[in-house]
Amino acid sequence: MTRTALSEKVPPIDRMAPAHLEPALFAMGCFKGLEARLGITRGVWRTSVGYSGGSFSTPTYDDAGDHIETVRVEYDPRTISYGQLLELFMCWYCGTPPDVSPRRAPCIFVRDAKERRLAQAAADRSVLCGRSYPKARIVSVKPFHPAEAWCQKHYLRSVPWLFEELMALYGEEEGLLRSTSATRLNAFLGLPAVPSPRSPRCSLPEDIDLYGLTPYAVQALQHLGV
Image 1 (cartoon, rainbow, N blue to C red):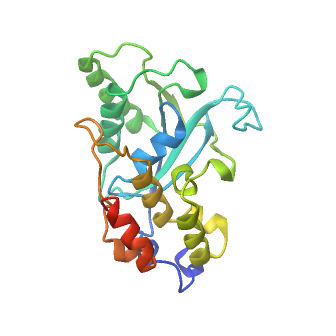
Image 2 (cartoon, helix red, strand yellow; image 1 turned 90 degrees about the vertical axis):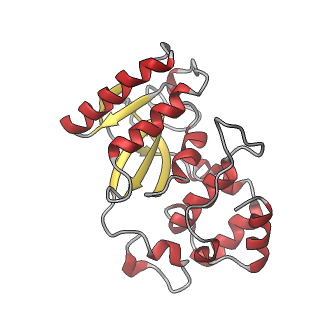
Image 3 (cartoon, rainbow, N blue to C red; image 1 turned 180 degrees about the vertical axis):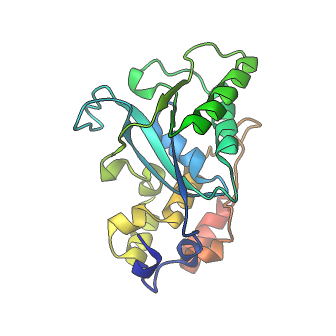
């Protein structure tokens, strides 16, 4: 969705997205949870879930073949660097129980030699956390296959009234799913209801007024601690 394609109804938060964003792909456990963690990160403007790392040509949630559940982010390198994203990923990796399912193996997809060097350095530092299995793999980027629409923005979809309100703003689902508004709200709703030192309840990075929501929606989200 380009800036010229944005309708006047689209919330200001989407018009604030920088024109140039860099992509990055990460995998660790269920992609729904990882999407939420990445989506609340300042400097990350868009997220999507899908499948990558394999050769199966038509992966689906029911049959991912040899692919891994993957999250694709689009981030502003002027706000958060690739190295900082890696440090966050490794911090979450060290604090997350291992998932033995091959489709949910921890993996960092790198685009070039620089990203590989940074990823390897972050992985080497993670040894200090005492985790030895499963080790996060570092592999060259392979085609990313977007998951089915019903997998995208899982936590936002679990609040039908809010999803429907956003649909009324965007007019069609594709634009909504690619929006920063959906990325942020999905992430906020996916955070733990009971915060802990390891998984704190976080606030939205931007002012809630930028999301174009009705007063009812704003009040409901503020009740949850926006």
